[in-house]
Length: 303
Image (cartoon, rainbow, N blue to C red):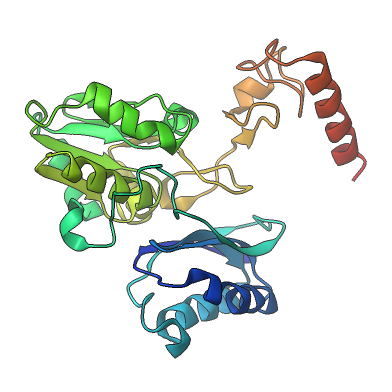
């Protein structure tokens, strides 16, 4: 039997002259379709992950692409499809933002094709990783890198050790050099962060910059597991927590005290207390935080 929920992770860098005018009708349409999740609108485009009954979700995405009210701006929407056994989100909302993925460098403009690096499709990605001269960079955050990343001829991808995407420009400034790093390949969950990252590098003089089209999700969906160069699981920003090859859900769960994904071994550790601490964050919280976490966990347990 197929999973009851379809999930669409989507984005598109495109000029939106008045995103606020789109918000009310788009939010009504999202809720009327019985969908859940969040869409972000900014002058640089659209981004989000939404879920719901498969037919309703596909109808909503198709309307984004084709409805004349959007002026064809979302016709080339990048969409990654997957499924979920349980409802991934509680609410449906459309939010206005300054950026659809926050880097904090407003002059970087991925909306113009000449400003971004070259796309590499998943079926070409493995050949690229076999090149020892390629500097492979995971543009995601530390907790995402922790549970899975790509392996190249030179070893595992470079971890920028960031906790938010806002920290990525500082990593580039401190660790990368256009004169030294001649070939740079980047990737992220669905493609949006690495696309914006290539725009940042191009603006700073890096010439040979590529990024994985569709991100890890598209790679895990299309590349057979025996041929895969991705080790581990891919963190996703919904209740599934992480997926692996074929976009199958894993047994990871979030630690609601620190936000890091936990494995069954973590949850069997003596330092793990559901909702209050995991082996990574035990001892790091104040008494007030612990009291708040305990209250929240008791409310969850009570249903």
